[in-house]
Length: 174
Image 1 (cartoon, one colour):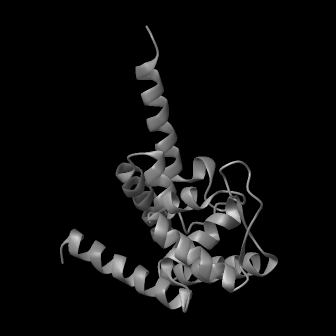
Image 2 (cartoon, rainbow, N blue to C red):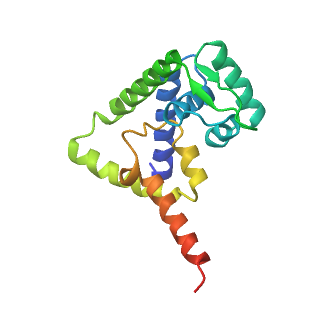
């Protein structure tokens, strides 16, 4: 079996596990819920960028989340309308995140600890090498538990910061 084929099978395994965990919540809705959980007060436009969906889709998904009582729009601040989770929405986001992590940990459980460490280093390298921008990082990490994977422990965020520093250094006058 080729590495690319195996990687594709792993991607489908993870995707199927996530679909099962999300149940009746779409991937877009989960992304908006979890993003609002970690970044309360952002706008629909910012959410659309993070979730990688269009503005009309974001509005439609937010309307559905609001009907469920999970999201509330705050009073406008100029042209911005900050969004926040309700207490029910916060509980739902926490429940989704816990189920997500449990499912993913279950996929790793069959690996001996030593193999898990090798796998973690390999994943970190693959993810860092794939990272091309901060926008890519936000979209790729839209379902991540940012309390667990943040700062130097996040290969994607670390690489995005490195790329930003390199760009800033190139822009500095000599």
